[in-house]
Length: 213
Image: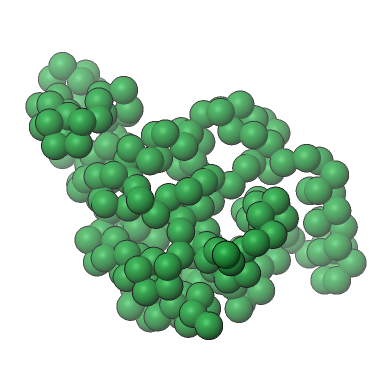
């Protein structure tokens, strides 16, 4: 069966860059933070101990992730039967943390994996694996040969193609990001609305067109 994949960034896609509602609910000392009671509530609702995660991250998912963006992402996934691979830097907290945090927005059932890291400085963080240097060098060399020696290849582009290289059964895929992912063909890329700093209806429609037959 051929899979469909959404390579998902979070900041500027689900979480608008100017949204800072989480800071109303967080305090430097967790004992004095409103999140302490929230953890108990979440434990009852989801059976997950969210106190093991940074309160700012949990609060961000609860209060800063844009409801419209989350709804549109679910629409994309449900209409196309696609799954999520996280390409965002959030992934450095590890797969279990991402699965638990995505549960708060009902997105956990779509999440299947994280991209590996191109930067070996982050190897091991959150259990993160690094991409083989040979693959990175090959991609950079091919990009320079095609676009010129000074052409920039975004690190997330390398990370996405590394994942695709290890999962050849994927035939339909799209990367959704607020950054310009140099090196990814426009037929596989959706840049989110810079004005809203999140996934909007136009971006969602484009992603659906890319993923559908």
